[in-house]
Length: 165
Image (cartoon, rainbow, N blue to C red; front, side, top):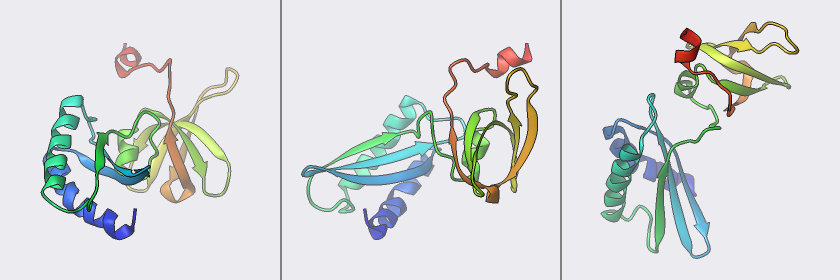
C-alpha cells in the first residue's frame, strides 16, 4: 500500500475508530488474487470486545462505502485486535503491557525476556526472571535501548487476583 493511500485511509478512518473509544493501531491493504483485503487493527487500554469490534467494523464499512478511498474493485474489510503476541511500538503499547512478559531485542545486540513492572516517559522498569532457582532481578531499560519488543504468551501466568491472595 502506498504511503499516500495509507495516510488517506488513516485520516478517513481514525476519527471513526476514536469515536468508538478505540485507537487505530494499524492499516494494511493486501492483494489476494484479484481481491484486496483491508485489515484494520484497533485496541484500547481496556482491550476491545467483540461488540466494539462489530460496531467499529460497521462504521468503517459505511464510511468506506460512501467514499472512493479503496478505489474501484472489490475488497474485504477485516477489523481485529493486535493479538496475543503483539509488537510494542508506541508508549501506550508498553503501558498496556504492564505485568506481561516481553521479549526485548536490544539496540546494542542481544535479547532479554522480562516482565514489565512500570512504564514512564523515558523507559520501563523490569523484573528479569531468575534462572535455576535464583531470585528475579530488577532492571531498567530506556526506550532508546530497545530495538524491538514483543509480548510473550504465558500459559501458566498468575493473574493479579492470585498474586494478591
